[in-house]
Image (cartoon, rainbow, N blue to C red; front, side, top):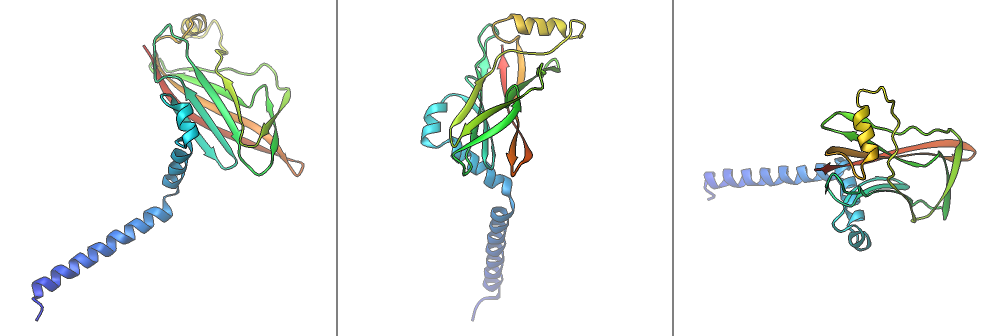
Length: 204
């Protein structure tokens, strides 16, 4: 005859095993952000990209038919050192090529100096529409070029002036945000696409 204590312990183990199995199923089926992050890591770490980006700081947004990627050559720079930032956009839909419509550029960089709480922004001087053709699974890319819009009467004018005059960035912590903003025509109707990704660098 089975000892009652053994029967109770066996029942408890079976209940715990069932609960554990149920928890795994809910996590796998409901947490889409985890699945998305796993896909992005798999994409970044494929053999070709792994070799290309080894030692670099990379941030990426995978948005269906488009991938937006921001790359910094380093996580930490010296104050007189040139900052190397690159923005990349890829179309990976079904067409062989896709025409996008944008103002000046489909990519732009926004910087935020964390310690001072200063935004380093650039506003395009023209609203004229331009067109760029993206070829399927080929990268469109731009390197960061210093451009900011500010007034001499701004309270942070001295910092802005130093930022523009120095070969690198003044010391501080910078959040770099890459934005993509463009329109495509779908059956004659304009569809706007806006994506963003960001990373943080330090300048000593």
